Length: 343
Image (cartoon, rainbow, N blue to C red; front, side, top):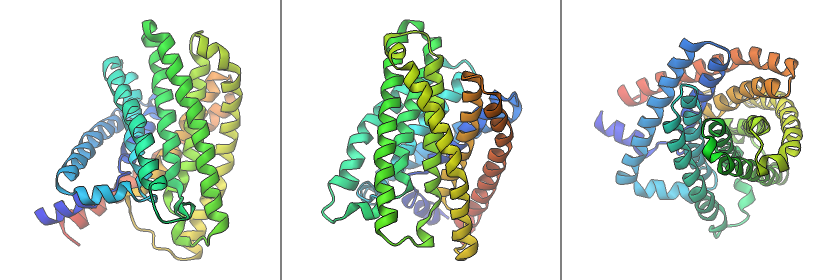
């Protein structure tokens, strides 16, 4: 049992904070719609998952540094470390809805600092520092998590802005800065991933769940933009409000357009080419985008007075809940059989 547990720690995916992201964002959507009890349950899962995964990563740092170092140098997995940034900020955003401003502020500081550090370390170790070329052959959906991490800082800063009036200008700068960088990072990652799909053979095994993050990154850009538009007047907000508002609608349209191709890719992978449908940590890379799209619709519908978009979000919430329940149930089953029973 101890050996199996240690093996699970050694092989812990760097992107497992996507569990925190997915649980947190579905909790946010439920809270917006007034389902307080269900939202509180998912908040508990989100917070417990954050603490547990953080402790497991610290244990991995102490006991399995070689594997950890290898993942920082692997462009297929290294960008998964940005889920720590997004998970930290998503948890903080959800806690702000409970009036926990202190925790939200602390988590934003931690998330933003981690984003700055990882934003320079991961691209260097995983991409620029590699001797083998071409690196574009290794681009995949996890690269979009870099953009998600940036936008999560923007959402957290914009969420805190009305609660901390003395820091309004600073939070406005942080929100607009993070949102702007996130847009450019999305464009850059999109180019690399598109080149990989066009220049190299795309096998069914290559269309992994993290490609859904391409949609989730657009959805969180919508939420960040809508929150910035709603902020009180500050020099940075006043200068960009029209641009941010317009691009937010464009991002929502593109996120909506991406959903059918992503569903079709999953059908092509699992039903057309019979790739086994087994649980893996990357399933949570589907949960977060699906939940994020629901929050994006609800937020944009309220910010820009678009009842149709808000109605889509209200319906999509139940899709997000179903996806979360599926991923959580299969995760529990997987842990029971692999860690406890050793199968």
